[in-house]
Length: 503
Image 1 (cartoon, rainbow, N blue to C red):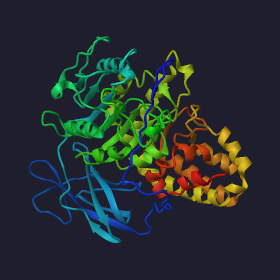
Image 2 (cartoon, rainbow, N blue to C red; image 1 turned 120 degrees about the vertical axis):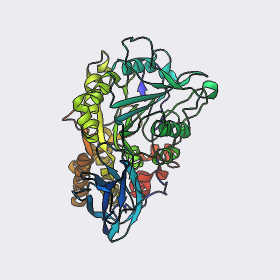
Image 3 (tube, rainbow, N blue to C red; image 1 turned 90 degrees about the vertical axis):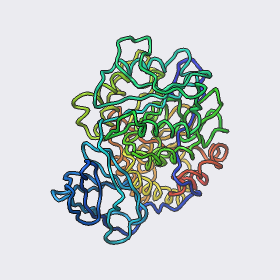
Image 4 (tube, helix red, strand yellow; image 1 turned 180 degrees about the vertical axis):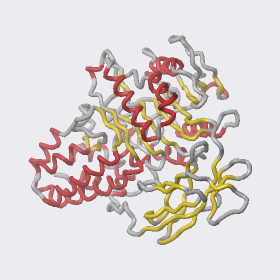
């Protein structure tokens, strides 16, 4: 959600489900056995990157290609012969990335057996013409595209940023009413009141429904595959709209839905529909930025962990102005920005946005928070959360007074939507409840959170960048008992059972 002061807003959710499961899967997040992956990376005569399980005559070894596995912080780099070996991989079906400067990033999935495994020969990468492609899904068919028109403000900010041969910015804009959808290819101009960038696509009939996930999937696919557009080493997806974390607390009938409020169609994207349309794209997304309120929730990030590497979002409500896109795009296109790793760039964007927010005239009306989360590091967070929840289920009934005190003092949103900063919640548990097992679990959870949050503002805050749904038992039963167990976090931990059974 983005807040328009003085106006009543309907907020939406952004939760993404990857393989929905039933409530409380017991926290079996980390497979018990490990394997390895080995192979060679070459370039063919046309310059494309190819993988092989064995040495290949007639191909040039590619040195410096990096192979990583999603959900783990391990990687391997090819040597002068193009060879690599990646050890310590959890067994089971895993997702891998292959990347090298000058090439598009490739992703593939394979079942890792215990012991040695070979890279599939089907892995290949194209030559990239860009460093970054920025894809902005501007779902403004609602009051954000009205009066004041924050969509036009942000579009003009994008145009004010310098052009770069290394960066392409594409915006799918859907404004209020019908016949008002267009795809912009952003180009620099100095007119701050009129959007002058060329429209490179207008849908038949002039209207797309940005409230359905298929439109989001179409947009990302168009950006990544259209023959008239260049390929990129890295992709950033910015989802622009209202947001309310994992659920919609203004209208409980919308629980289990997400972002993309389209007033013309009266649709909102369902959470279960978003991961398939992102995961099916040919090139993986490095950064998902949510220019919306309340999106920095564990439920959101955990569901998204196979959709992108880094999530930029806020634990709190955000200013109606949203991101300052002049400053964000200026960072990406700068010489320093072009040399940054995706993690460093995500951190830099987070810092830039937060700094801009603190300088807004109405900054004092908000609790300003923004963080960047490495979603590849969230499985240890879920595992630690599960241990905490299991212990709370066992002993929580003995500490009703302490739990009530924690509920009323934990850092979190002040809009009655029952969100709590997860680090502060764990810290308060370890301070107020004298149980050694619980304190150990809380400490492990805080460590895992600190490892996964790569940037968090303001620094020094009790809030550390990830919130979680923490309602009373009454509120959970009333608002979430039928939808919350369907989240992947509920399938992999006992958190939902703790919420349902807490005193």
